[in-house]
Image (cartoon, rainbow, N blue to C red):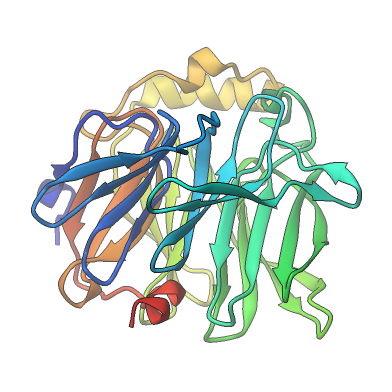
Amino acid sequence: MDYFKKIKFVGKGLKRPECVLVDPENTLHISDFRGGVSTIKQNGDIKLTKPNNGFKIKPNGLSIIDKNTWLVTHLDETEGGVFKLSFDGEIEPYLLEIENKPIPPTNYVHFDVFGRVWITVSTRKIPRIISHNSDCDDGFIILVDNGKSKIVADGLCFANECFFNPFDKKLYVNETFGRKISYFEIGKNGMLFNKKILANFSFGEFPDGLTLDSEGAFWVTSIFSNKLIRVMPNGEKKIIFEDSDPAYLNLIETAYKKGNLTKEMMSMVKGKVLKNISSLAFGGENLKEIYLGCLLGEEIAYFKNDVAGLEPAFWKNFA
């Protein structure tokens, strides 16, 4: 199937819609850099929910923990943490400190089938652009379980989206500038150990978004190259489609290897259709549609798929 030719778009006026989720009613929930969460219902109605107390949040990662509450990561230039934002705009801190220190700008938050919350911090360095190279080694993962939080893995090369795999009970994480998907066994105390690599990526491939289908394969978005990649449980990779510009990827690769990537380089729109895809979620009838978040667009791309997605963990809270 030529998935690329089937791409359509939904929404308008979104700002940096990096993370997208789909609920059982097929409403899209999208992090929006205008300072909140945008929802798009099946009938096309769009609503932006901002904190009603005026707090200026910069949403990046997004999760849903019940019928009325999002968890939102704060990706400010110098501040981070995770906040609870209700569907009617009430906001309160969820986790702002770890090991008695403020949490740096925070990338992603994942709610798993056991009700645990996994949080990734890509780097401790400020500004974050310093870590956009293969030498980065200070990303970490936080686990929140039964109200207690702790760092459970450290030394990652730009920790990005993570996903608890209910098939093998392991936690997977994209190390974006390490260009790999790593995975861990989970100890009884929640600590992550026995780190291994599921897949390495090559030229123009920088894994960002991560989700799982019903057959146990991961789907990965690659920033810069607008690649969508399916990764089988044995690590075998299949490129579903790509919307990239060779000259631009050469520029990115050269800067990445020299350690001098800039925001200006990363803000160039070079895809013919897609605008730096960053995340993905299954939705639609029988979970056979894929929705793509992005860094540089104002809409959400989507297309029909042959393989169904895995039902998201938060769906049980909508029953």
